[in-house]
Length: 538
View 1 (cartoon, one colour):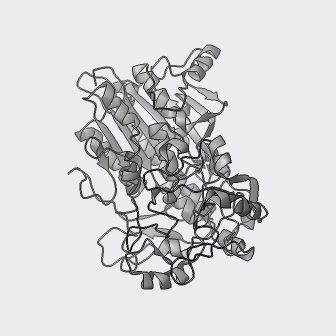
View 2 (tube, rainbow, N blue to C red; view 1 turned 60 degrees about the vertical axis):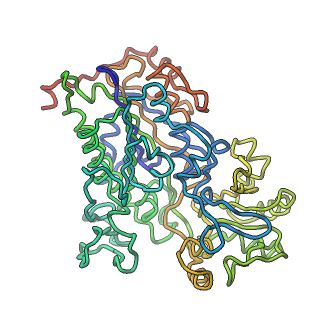
View 3 (cartoon, helix red, strand yellow; view 1 turned 30 degrees about the vertical axis):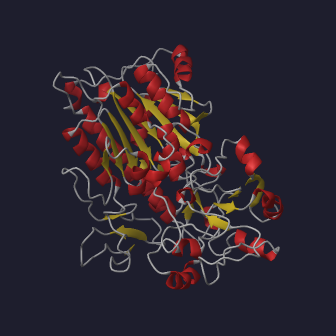
């Protein structure tokens, strides 16, 4: 990019609810860095993600500016292909099929914001620095984007390993000792001495549970800084995953009546993790403020920074008496064609529908179109199911959620979203199907794994509110120190950046640029300039 043109940094704090912004803990404000950035830019208080409110769906939506009906990423279930109605096939292993997220997104031919950037200028450098490996696989162009993610064997040589860490940090005086905080050990360490009072899983029992596969936000920011020092990308997407990981492990600290929720909720640990993540963002911002190019231009002053999230998080009220959609359908005589008791990959001609896949707060039901009416009539009377949150084909089409079958992917005829704080179990057969074992072994594992999921989950309309902050010091089009309450969408992020950078909106983008709202705020009061000179930052 030419001298004077802005670098763009999108920082996605995975799993951050909008109401985490400005929340208060024993440290004081939990998000002082975000609050400071908001004063230097414009903050949107009513930004929504798209349904389902899950990671794959919304990271894809942010970077491609396309709704579910276009990009087709429903979440974990969105990666499955090969399900036909003559025989149940969900995974390639053992006669079943699975596609990677990379194949799934790229099969659609949808350009990301970074692809669009290269179409305007082939010399631009783009980078994904992500704390979740599979998100990088979905979004990045492996041949053209710098892609850094945990566990990758193709990371650039300057990537450093992640050290062991406590999720949420050490417990403070007055914090609840139960449930204990989780310790994530460094990969390859044979003897682990976890800090006192922490819970951890020995690497021998679960090899993937280490800091290399679940890195800290510190690791992500370290790699982002290394990448700027070595390759100086023009566009960078940074995914900080620890708020989401802590949300699943400890629940949300913003839910009311926490005492009524399951006894595995640890709001103190969740608040501490939000504060830790904010400090890591501060470290990145401070790095930009101290960095100058060869022409003496300050990097922060010539940056466009976007802070957002893919979804929120809710604490679960029950983890034993969960809403078992499969069971309740079966009790009404509506049975699944797949035999899920002893043979996860078996098939039963007497069943009324093909498959029910759980993503905790919501489920996908695969059936023929003429079967969905009977299924919906039963589900709408289940406890903790809002009839307005049952999406059959017609309702999916109305909400831009219906993509339909394509390639060899089968689309769920019915999507069911539960009330906030409730979930379905993670069915053992769908978990066992992911394991590298023969069917007869997986069938035994399926009986053991039919368990609830986690203290915190997301996916419903209750987790759609996310933060959104635009900061661009000195850029006249972006107001400084304003708050906008009008509803916007994560789909609007990429079109806004494109509009600011090139004054053009790619035809594939379905969101709307936010410049009219920027202009509305600028007319209310002259923008306040925030200048960072060499003297101030030294």
